Length: 445
Length: 153
Image 1 (tube, rainbow over the protein chains, first blue to last red):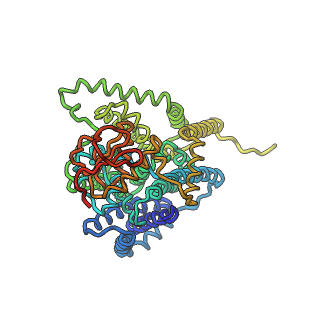
Image 2 (cartoon, rainbow over the protein chains, first blue to last red; image 1 turned 90 degrees about the horizontal axis):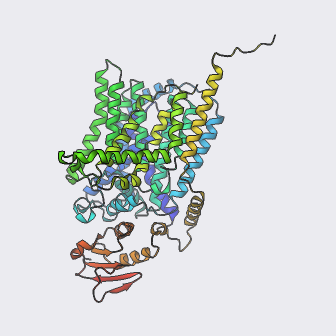
């Protein structure tokens, strides 16, 4: 099979996921821009397609493109049948609520041009080679390939001691999505499967752009989209094959849903919180942490006297995380966290913690001073010269998430400095597209 | 008397703040681009173009073997000779750990084990390593291969 044919099959898988995601997420995304709805459709569809793969595997049916397509079609038809009666009223209300914009197109067009160029380069770079990031070979891609080639989820992926390096405790959405997309082509082609990453990057940029244009301005939307697209720490070929790029999409969706929840009364924002929460938790372990921090922010900032609505939002955020954790526990049993040495939390070892924490903070400070001084200063001055924006309530989530990373590195099973140098920049930069929502939502005088 | 729009109080200050904000965003954008290596990007885009054209002899996997280009041929040969249900011990240099990860990934879904699980292996493949070598064995590109137990099909 030529690369073009393999790419076409992966694209068909992504389109099928987006179509079923579109149908299922309609109830949650009405009133959003088309760009946001596409992003939500992909995020939602990836979860549904992964579930479809699990259903086929549990029925001992070898997953194929046609079977997954049939599953997606059945779910989409069911969702549309259940939702038909409400869709017209929603469409009318959504149309009423959007005033025509009189902003200039020139600067936004230039900025979108920059974003399109940056994304196109990432697309070409990601597809140039088979994926070979260490994390892809050791676990994300490895698990996906084993599932795709054996048409089952072998117990050994979670129990075999020889796979001690394969992070048995990690969530499974990335391997399942890769295996599902491989089924559309009928073979494992790790060059064509890399298309998954530019697709997630594009959905992230669409979500950033659509959200800020709806909530702030065309210029803010274009600025944030260009900044996110230019983030070469995140959108680079070495990250194709890892979970970072889809996780950045999950964080953008979670933040946009949280801001919407704080600004409006519609129940659809609580539904979006639930979808984003599931997407975060099913991609990376730290997704659950981000969701928990968002829940704290919502609890602090939600309007007083609306306890019922707040309870609903907190339930929407936290229940998917808990349900996902229970499902994984039931499916594969208790798994040790290989990244962490929790004996450091026992009283006999408390004396070691301050020195380790100091070491971690020292490394963070060194990275900040030698590599990130310009962007940190630029962000600080930007906050000083601009006025409050709609995303400011979410601002503390980002430094607190970094602080928890510092604590995690402190109890690392490996040398903390080795762990920081290997992972910190990559995991921290997953937050950047979500951070642009907060940054560019601020009002420039 | 010329009619001029009265200037809003503090308009100059506002313009200055807007200019500062724009400069900050430009500085941030420039710093985000710092990991870019234009030469490497051009080389990747050329490889992508070549892969799309379907040039014979192109191996998209080759970049993942930057640490030892010969290792890809060795794993290909092990993959050809060892059944998918077998357990294969792949004995390789300990550094970089990409030797281990590439063996696991390239030979999947075979069960690939390290030296400490040698007893469980149906087949032993050694590459640039003296460990596990015994008498006999078949020479394959870059290494040797021993069949220890009767292999599963």
